Image 1: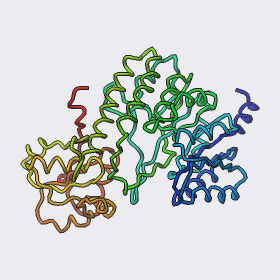
Image 2 (image 1 turned 180 degrees about the vertical axis):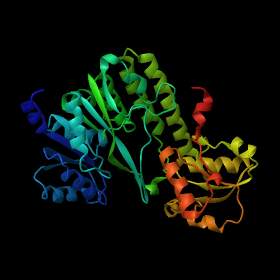
Image 3 (image 1 turned 180 degrees about the horizontal axis):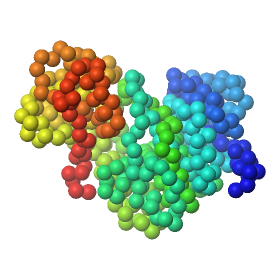
Image 4 (image 1 turned 90 degrees about the vertical axis):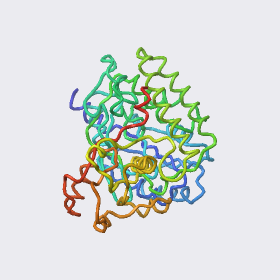
Length: 409
């Protein structure tokens, strides 16, 4: 590649599409994170999808801050329609997406475009930060996290949804942590049924990944995904099973066109089982945790050590399932349940305390850390030891088991 071509590509326009719906409290931070990108050759397309909370007016105000911002207003039609509207109006040869309640690192697009051009790739993929009210951590490594992969090598189908052994998550199905060549994106975003309301990203992303000539991955977190703690208890959706059925048929049609169709459809069926479990739990769940748990603790390990009383650290998805499991079996007593974000969980009805209350507990055998991410568990373990004086041999963590793994799928 010549120096002139390098300079030309460094000026390549990126269209950043931001679907907007009722995010007035988050939108400005999101847009500002795009405005300050070190890669300046951008256009920012805000698609107001019929917001009712003032987000549409805020879009118009933000447009005055930067001439690169364009605003589209439409009646509420869903995220797929909003993305399609943005894509239709995109002038750039490269396209990225940002969800309007999230934000990005200042050099996200500089790093992704550099990787894309260096490897002559069709898609560049970064990693995500997971952000909560009082915590930030990098998502766990997926089965592919660095390097350049060509279609002819037939490697990437083995990393769609899951790794082949189902131990690790596969390639992220999210649009937002990636940079696409527009010509590829146009072809496969168009196959997503506009009525799709669940996992619509997956259909487009996996179609693009499987059909790209080259996909490059950087081992750096560049995108901030905000998890709203107030949403840990979700309302039942009477159309949920219809939505996941529509997703299944679309995703299956994509996979059937691939040489590795049998492998991919097998992973899709496992994926659907997770969706079904989630739907059952959301529709019929009660109290703490789920009727059918996603995760369960290694109680045998505790029993073998003679433990009878524990402190449970973590009230996220893993922690709630662990708590429910301990309650149901009645073998191990949870004498205290703690999490840094206890106030948010209490709003949703969970009896969770702050970690500093551990000092008030007179007797317990161990602190069991209930999280899925190994690096988060390590950080929590260090905090428990250094900040609260808990002996390292009283802090237990092992990667949580998944109920779905017991089904042999």
